[in-house]
Image (cartoon, rainbow, N blue to C red; front, top):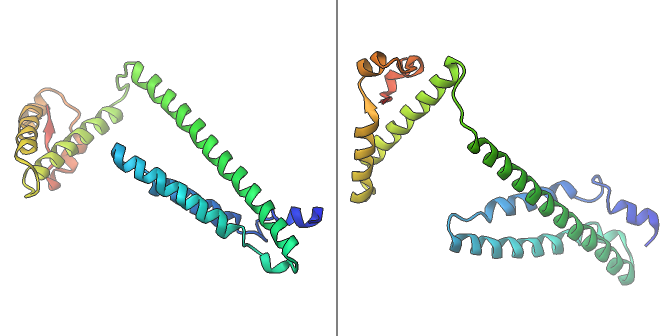
Length: 187
């Protein structure tokens, strides 16, 4: 292949790099597992998808080459670039994941107290919404008895009346605005 032909392999207007990237990221998203078994299955699925994507990708613009030798060389160039791209994407994802994990650890290691009313109101509102979600889960038919009892205990111990919340000076303003959807007052 000529240098110009190899340069074309990196041209996103000529080769569908954006689609390759999108399909690859979608594969990563689809491969997430919620358990060890699910993660293992997802990993195998992702590996198979990468092989499929590379094979499909390597056929991009193959019709522009008239000899088998040139077509094989073109496939080899695209295969190499696709492998490098996948490796860079996965390395960067691991780096970002590690950085995010470290930032989360740093945040969790420090104590935090809201410095203004807005933060306190938001957190209080979120807790009330979580208590409401627990109440909703209690009445669902597919909720196990064990979970139902645990949720009832949580709701009972973590809920107060509006009057008790106001008396305790809880940041209730946002919850009061949303009482129409029956959020609970957290204790």
